[in-house]
Image (cartoon, rainbow, N blue to C red; front, side):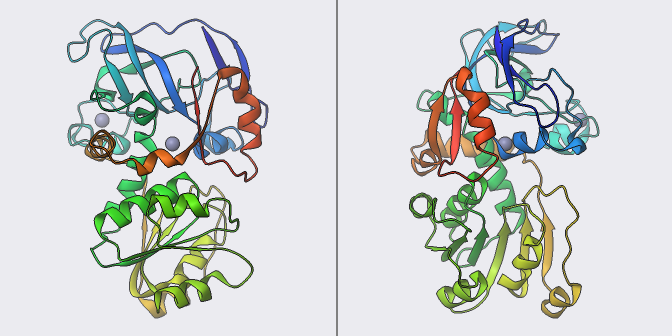
Length: 333
Ligand SMILES: [Zn+2]
Ligand SMILES: [Zn+2]
């Protein structure tokens, strides 16, 4: 089969022929229908902190069709269309049993979506309802990441929200925040590229340009935010988030920053604000994200700007290292 293979840090992905994976007991082979390119995949190819082995096939936002069953698989059959929860836990510890494989001591983030076929444990595969398309299936993972952040923030109907960063996770966060009842959702970004898309996803205002973003957001909301979502992940953003939040408000940090970041504690102490971090999602949040799409919520589909083939993936992947007008790119291997 063909796959875009990781060769080493800061090297371009390489499309080559590799063997189709063989399922172990409890696993299934999935013919990948769509796979989203995720910002964390970009990080993984740049940063030694992630320890990605050469030869790995990345791509964890995928959906497809089950084409082969390993032994002992009873929950699925060949031909089932599924979306995949990419965190593979042990399957039997309290975290795994309560739907939080991301907190399992043995958790591993599986890839494989940048190839024609991928392997996953049957328990990671969630069947797609008839009404969900395959591209919807590949959108479930980033939606679930955003939903988890919103759940961790304890957002209440009527809250005023600022989202830093109009990437896919920031936009999906705006979608959920609005859906759960936020009164105002202001997205800030250095570029204007995603303004229209942000409004489609549920933002009420979009802040960009040279004037201080905190000043602009305060003016739009008539005060500070109850909750600030940090969805950029570069040094300086936590300090920025603290400036946006009200006294006793909450800063929810999702941006995947792998470098040291500093802020002045006095600024946060003055406000007695809470800093809360968020990682992965619960299986239940994945299922809810799929439900929302299959019950007819069309807004998240606006996240998808491009669908490309495997041959185009290495170039598209490199281009995403710099901000572009694109949002979520999906691959159809
Ligand atoms: Zn992702
Ligand atoms: Zn476990």
